[in-house]
Image (cartoon, rainbow, N blue to C red; front, side, top):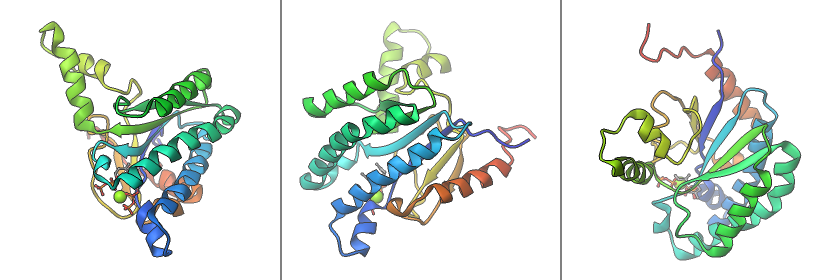
Length: 226
Ligand code: IPE
Ligand code: IPE
Ligand code: MG
């Protein structure tokens, strides 16, 4: 039987290198990367199987970047969400986030909240953007909430307090040739299949995604069994 792909997660990496290789500023890579987010989201919304797409957009470590780049990313996100509303509605995409939104500007927090609210009844696909997300931060916040009542913490307790109430990840893809997880979804990928492609995120296409999915479907997932 072929594997079912319900929850796909992607580490969208390589925007900066894509721009540099064209003699452009790094931010141009982020702009092109945002267009690819739209194409990949639309592809996933039109797949009968994929119900959740979790995209790494900004990590808890990305604050280390120059202020100019961080500011640009925040503005790009605000602009992206406003422009994208039409696409979310047309394609039936519910928008959600994981990560700690606290440090973001009021304007960006408002845009995020409005987009969540406007798309909450869409049901073809849930697109989750990981924003100021780090798996260690998520786990620490969850553990601190879960242990407040002083009892032993069960798996169920912990999962209730994680940022994502969605199902475990079936397939994790990282673009740009880097083979590391960079603090992404450490709990939820416990049994995910992993795929690394050298393609830089701005060059990633639904055609390549489709090939990766076909390959994933043929893999044997054993979950510790035989
Ligand atoms: C991924 O691309 C996007 C974000 C982390 C926001 P990068 O900006 O990390 O691109 P490279 O890795 O420098 O090429
Ligand atoms: C991971 O990419 C974070 C996102 C894609 C948002 P990075 O480019 O920040 O990761 P490292 O620094 O290469 O590990
Ligand atoms: Mg990178």
